[in-house]
Length: 156
Image 1 (cartoon, rainbow, N blue to C red):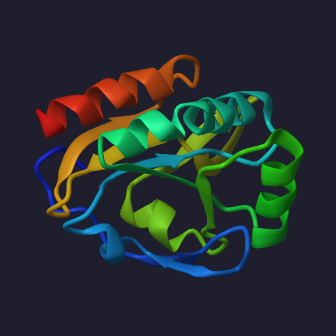
Image 2 (image 1 turned 120 degrees about the horizontal axis):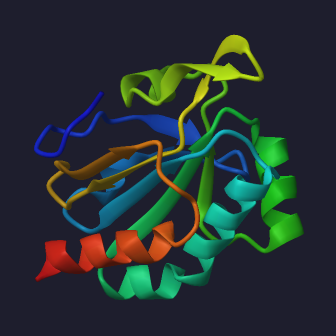
């Protein structure tokens, strides 16, 4: 699992419009709030994505760029975005490479069955590409405002 102070793993992934997003392009310009979520349209995932979208302008005022990642494909992301009015970037990590690099692809037990899945996690990467915040197994409710406080602290 990653910790604050480490260099953030770099990556390039497609967004809901199938455009490639290179995380390195934000270096020197934005603090990146990177949230990993299990799947599109699940209740907590919807709450988290819409909450970040509702506060996107506030993040932008503090040089923050919010990006969500799951293993859903680009088409599912587009449907999810359009259905719920989500404005933050949603990236598709279908093969799970980035999820593994960030340590969010973990063994879980669901209804007595052991399987792997994404653990809801959030990372804040500063303008120099360094992890300033890393949290695994986060609670979706109120999380966006908590991350906004983190971004404000980075900028102060």
